[in-house]
Amino acid sequence: DQQVKQNSPSLSVQEGRISILNCDYTNSMFDYFLWYKKYPAEGPTFLISISSIKDKNEDGRFTVFLNKSAKHLSLHIVPSQPGDSAVYFCAASGGTSYGKLTFGQGTILTVHP
Amino acid sequence: KAGVTQTPRYLIKTRGQQVTLSCSPISGHRSVSWYQQTPGQGLQFLFEYFSETQRNKGNFPGRFSGRQFSNSRSEMNVSTLELGDSALYLCASSPYPNTGELFFGEGSRLTVL
Image (cartoon, rainbow over all chains, first blue to last red; front, side, top):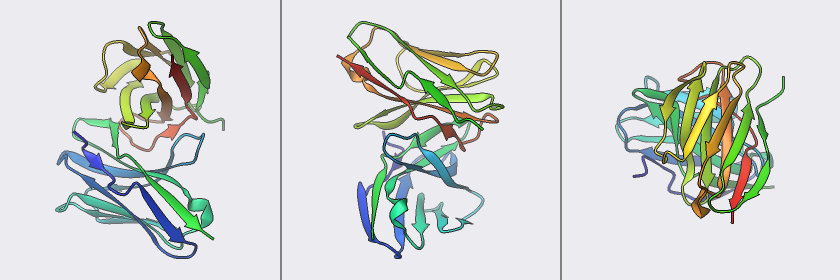
């Protein structure tokens, strides 16, 4: 039972354009969502998060949008840079287990110069 | 500030053996979590510790165990290793429990032959 899904295994984008990574969840108890970035041979790095009381959170080039009714969130990267090429994981927590993150399978983003 | 340190980085074991992995969190961080990453299952939560107490546990068999010491360092143990235990084991720390903004180490790559 995959409660957090990233349906696109990979995404390829030109430098300077927008990258949009999507994530869907099924567990209604989730109320805190995060995005992590992972380079090869490194641990995941926290990027940005959003609480369910918001529908948008912005941090520099990164914006996360949350649509609670659709149980969908997305990460927008504008403008995309070659250094953004990495695996992006969506994660969720909530209910009685905020310390437990449920991760999606990840999306490999490649930004071409 | 030093990051999360995991040892050993790589290890090879045979079926039936046991293994102990170690994690030193960022100085001042009292919460430590463990995750297993495999190509098929992605990142899966193992356990979370805070002040030497296990606060959350994932859906793994009893062969997987962990503990946290008074200095916040943590260890996880896997007994009676199976081929399917081959994975990257990631440790993450945070200043407080119940937060998803985790700081991950580079992981311990376990291969079971």
